[in-house]
Image (cartoon, rainbow, N blue to C red):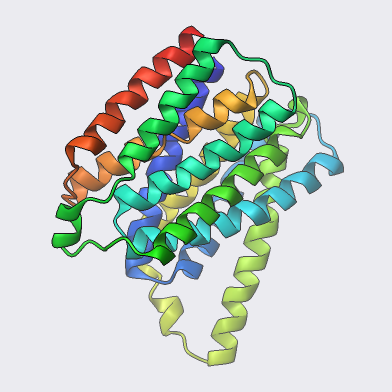
Length: 287
């Protein structure tokens, strides 16, 4: 069940990142992250009481810190998705977001079979192949790979990885209240910043610019927050190393959506990476 939830998390993460990247092409990244996190907050507050009766301020606080780290990761990722090719930015972020919690899990004493570890290795290779630059995408004017793109993508992944670790440190029976804590913190901070920027500049054009992207932003909030909730549930029944790596396969859905919707062409190596992702999933499941 943890493997299935890890894959569903990847699907939601990838979809949320795709819609977030598209939203950032239409309005500022601050608008996208602030509004999408607020949408996610509303949704998770409505769902949380239905999933558990347990609540602790400790776990709520851990979730709040996780939200700050994840929010920084989202800002970096969405900027990268808006300025660089999605088929490069998303997998690079995923490598870091998978490696950080996997290393933490190993140091924390998680015990996995040799076959499962081999599957994790294959998954990291798959993500790496998917992240190779695609000259066809650059030729289509869909963005080029720069040093800044690579640094932002990896930094975003570290932020996500740290968020995963903190979520895993919360008690199993309080999920998804830590996600509520995360969204309360990020929504309050980002909406305050958004309002302050509007008052200071006395320019409503930035807020008006949200309207064309509002539908995409709502979808971003639903998928992004939903992925966090599902991830938290997955770690309550499975190892962090496995769930984090499976969740980090989200570039598969991002790249496919970019190929179908934006007509970004995938190279043979990128396609090989997607196939290896399927092999890795099978190995981890068997192991």
